[in-house]
Image (cartoon, rainbow, N blue to C red):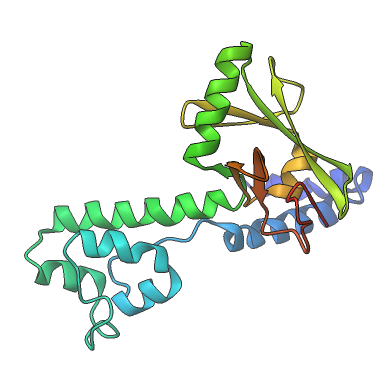
Length: 214
């Protein structure tokens, strides 16, 4: 077993190996910071609601109405659910559901979502034009620096990110996704005109027409 000590001979030919190993270990140690948040049954109800307000609705739907009462800072989620007559199996199911809610929100920040109106319009256009879906892209221009572009797409392009929601497909290139991730795609039909609109949380400013941003 001690023969592995002779390994340093390999390091003579690979002087950067130790540095690369140290860098890899450093990167590995940093990975948990990017992990999806998780709810555990031993967390207090107050801490859960404070960190993840999106779970209030599913909690109350499950019969837990003490999310804001005086015991919530001291009562764990498990205690609260058991106190409402639930068994451990039900507790596990609700914890899983809450984690699904926060995971969906966490993932939504890395992609885009679309409204029912947008999905319906994409379906309508795709069917009438025999297209596969809608391509969303960003190009320099417009009155704010960058402008959104929408066109029907018939096939996938190299490196495409494909988002499938509401029986529709949206095609986006990675560089575009970096500029619009977390956005919501909508379709508006008003007296001022009709078209797709993007609500982009990354935009510092948006023009009045809503088709360009900076």
